Image 1 (cartoon, one colour):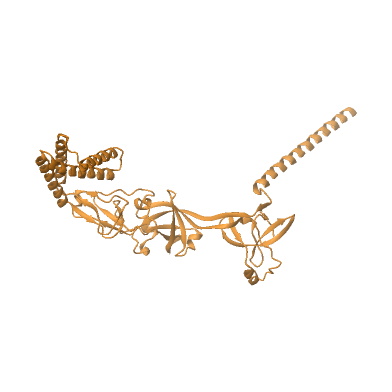
Image 2 (cartoon, rainbow, N blue to C red):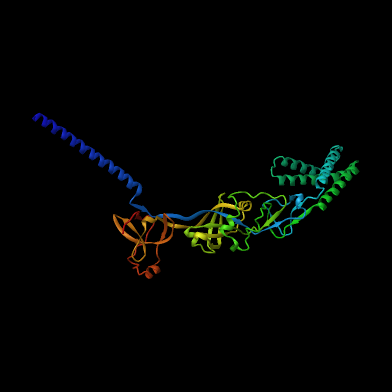
Length: 415
């Protein structure tokens, strides 16, 4: 019987020993997890005060408004030919495009045919032309022809071909006065000039009524998305346009337009607290999807339904992006500030409403009054009060200590 009791005692002792070991291991594991948790939550008791930059930004989509005048002639059904290419600036009164005449296709075919005859006649001439003018013209034709092989822009290719034809005509006129077959070449040159005059006479030329940037991206919204009266713009009117963000406006074959290149506008609907406090005249920065950063100014603010705000930004730069789109995604930088950058969690407020931090120096903690200059959700840019401001606040200047660069402050202080 005694042996049985001893066995039980031994068994109970072993069980208690195991229990104690397990309990100790449990506490160790719990301590490790808690240490890791607090290390992640508060990576350090203090943080060093240093210089930094803080911004307040917001992303949105907006509608592009421009001051633009659509130009459309009577012969628009014949199709237009650009003279001033897309995106280039034109002066008031400058011819920017033309409409073809009714027989333009046939007239151009005749000119091409005569050009071929002139080239053939010149090629069959004896090599008797030794004048500097002829050699210079031939050199120009050769250079233009070589450059033409490398070009891809249709407007530049067209211009090069026109220049080659003009040089060829000059060569033909000179050759016609020096060769035995000069009469034939002269006659061909005269016929060509007659057809070119007909081409010009039959065309309808459109000139710029004002200076500005030329565009052929006409979408019919020029009068709807107008800059004349921003009060006509609402969230509902913008959404009813059913425009896709980032879609490129197609090029028209019937009309062009002149855009005021001195200012452009973006209308957007926002609901942030910053937008609700937006003031006309405030300067901001707009960043387009391409990365282009443009200075802008708030030109118009209006309240919409559901506490939303319509804000119209004025941009003084007209990029290609702002010409070829109507609805874009963009980023607003409301403000940017530089100075001492610290976490918001480091800042406390006393009973007088003054902000302060706790500086730790040589193991001693001290309250340091600071001025919050700018802040976002996570960080603040802080500064110090001037002596005059401290006097007005009733703070003893001699006893007050100011925050300094490289000071160590508590990240999560308590009052």
